[in-house]
Image 1: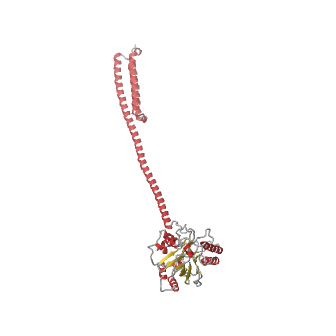
Image 2: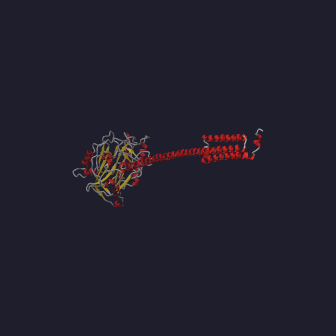
Image 3: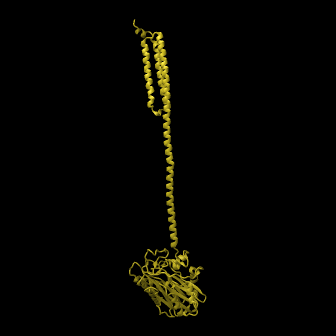
Length: 500
C-alpha cells in the first residue's frame, strides 16, 4: 500500500499554561507531505519535567525508526517495540532520582507499505475519520479512570467530562518502571482517499465532541489550513496545553502485500463503547479549573483518588497514568465504597442487636429472680408464723389438761382425808398426804410456768403434746402410790403416833 498525503497540519498551543509540556514530531511547521511518521506526546510532571519526558519520547522513537526502518517495507510490531524500548531507556537516563517521577502519554502513527500502524499510551487520542460517509472508523480507548468507569457502566458519557477524577490516567511512560508500560497497537488497512487521521492531546478535547470534530473536517468550503485554523479557534479558551496533528490522505495505491496485512480496526471499533453509545450526544461543558496535577495509577488497581487530601503522586497536569494490562477490569471506586459501607452497616447492626439482646435478657432475668426472691421470703415467714401459732395452741391445751388434772388430784385428796378420818388415820398420815399434795402442786406450778418460755419451736405440736402426756402420767402414778400407802401400812404408823 502506497500513500500520497496532503501537507500535514500541526497544532501546538499553550492554552492557559505558562509552559509547554506537549511535544510533537515533526516539530510544528516542519512537517511535509513526504513524512510518514508522526508522534504526539503530552508531558506530565510540572515545570520542565513534563517537557523533558515528552521531548525524550518523541526524540527517541523518531530517531530510532529513522535509523532502523526502511520506508519501502512494512513497519513490524517488533521494530516498533524496539523504538519504544529506546524511548524508555532515554527516560531512565534523564531521571534525576526525584520521588515524583515525570511522565508522558504517547500517540503514534506510521504510514507504511502494509497500511497504518497506530499506537497509544494514556489519554491522548487517535481518530480515523471518513467525512465522505460521516463515519468515525476508529477512536482509541483512553487509558483513564473515568473512561474505564464509563465502560463498566458506573458513570455516563457526560460524567466523563465533569468527573472530579478525570485527571487520573491508568497508563503513562515513566522512567525506572519495574515493568514498562505497554502500548495498544492497532493495524489499519481500510484506508481511502479523503480519510483523515487526527492525533491529539487531551487538551484539544476539553470542549470538543466527536460530532464537532466531524463537522469541521466535513466542511467542503474549508481547506486543510482553514480546518486547522478552525480547530485552534474552538479550543482557544482551553486551560491545558493542546497539540495535534491532522493528516489528510490524498491517494491510496493498493499492492499485493495488502492482502497479507492484519486489519484490527473493525474489532477495535466494536469494542469501543464510546463509538457505539446511543445515549451519547452533544452538550455544553461548564468551565472548570483544570490546573490540578495529573495522577498516575497502575491499571488494574484503579481507585477513585481523594483530590482534596492527597497530593498528585507523579505529575502536574489534569490527568494521570501508568500500569500494564490493557482494558483491565478492576472494581470501580463507586462499587468498592458501596460495598465497604454496606459491610460497616451490617457490622453496626449486628453489634447493636447484640447489645439490645444482652440488655433485654438481663432485664428479664431480674424480673424473674426478684419475684422469686419475694416468694421465697414470704414462704419462710408464713412457716414460722404457723409453727409459732401451733406451739401456742399446744401449750394452751396442755395447761388446760394440767389444770383439770390438778382439780382431780384435789378432789382425790379430800376423799382420802375423809376416809382416813373415818378409819382412824393419824394426823401424821394427813400431813404426809398434804405434803404430797403440795409437792404435786409445786410440780404442776412449775410445769404450768414452763410453757411461758415457749419450748423449742422445731418440736412442733406432736412434741409438746407428748411431753404434757408424760407429765400427766407421772403425776397420776405418784397419786396412785400415795393412795396405796395407807392400805399397805395401816396400823404401825398410826400406833406409833398415838399418845397412850
